[in-house]
Length: 170
Image (cartoon, rainbow, N blue to C red; front, side, top):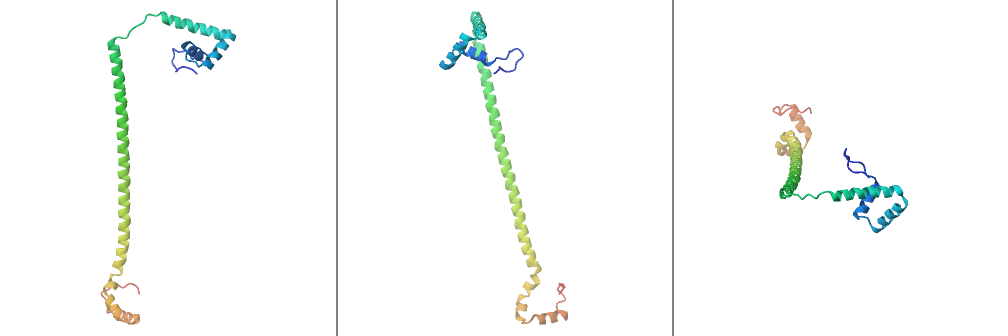
C-alpha cells in the first residue's frame, strides 16, 4: 500500500506501515508477535524500525505549539460552513430530483391523456361516421319496413322517385 500521490511523499510499503502500527501500539497480539519475530531475524527490518524510532524521538523534541482560540474558532467555522454547503447541495439535489420526478409524471400523464383522447375521438368518430353514412336508411326505416320486397324499392329507384338521394352505385 502507499500513501496518496503527492510529490513530497515517498510511497510506504506494507512492512513500513506494519512498523508504524507497531510503534503506535495499534497491532493485535498476533500481529505484534509476527513483527517481533521478524525483528529478531531480519537485520534490515530492525534498521527500519530504528530509523522510525529516531524520527519519532525527533518529533517529540520539537516544541509544542498550541492553537490559538481564533484558530480553533476559524477552523470550527470552516467546518460548519463546509457542512452547511454540503447540506444545501444535498437539499438542492433532492429538490431537483423531486422536480424531475414531478415533471416526468406530469409529462407521462399528459401524453396518456392526449393518447386517450385521440383514441376515444377516433373510436367515436368512426362510429359516428358509420351512422352518418347510414343516415338516409335510418331516416326512412319506417317506410322501408312497410315494403315487403326489395325488388319493389329497386323498381321505384329506377323510375327516379329517389332523385334527391345520392346514387350509391347499386
